[in-house]
Length: 141
Image (cartoon, rainbow, N blue to C red; front, side):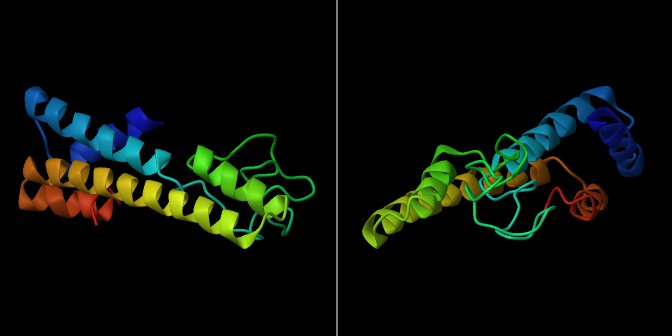
């Protein structure tokens, strides 16, 4: 599926040179990977908004990642997210919840910074037309 998406993007970006495409596609892949692995990124469900109704992470019928499917959802399985879900499920004191929430927020800031750097690296090798295509494809803000 990813190969088809990349082939379509190459065609829309009108990249004919294989070496140019190799550089662009590597940077696209890096951006895509960072987006998928980011805590709260694509695939992460908001509490109470997934298939099968509500509930907090770790609630009845749900795993610690909150997916209800026997394992953390992509992008939602970080150790920090799991620790926060456990704190909520176990009704830990506010101080512990705050500590775990702070660690999750720090991880998210770091992930966002890595993603921003990867997006800038991608933007640096694109023409204006290609950059616009990348924005429309959701690869760049």
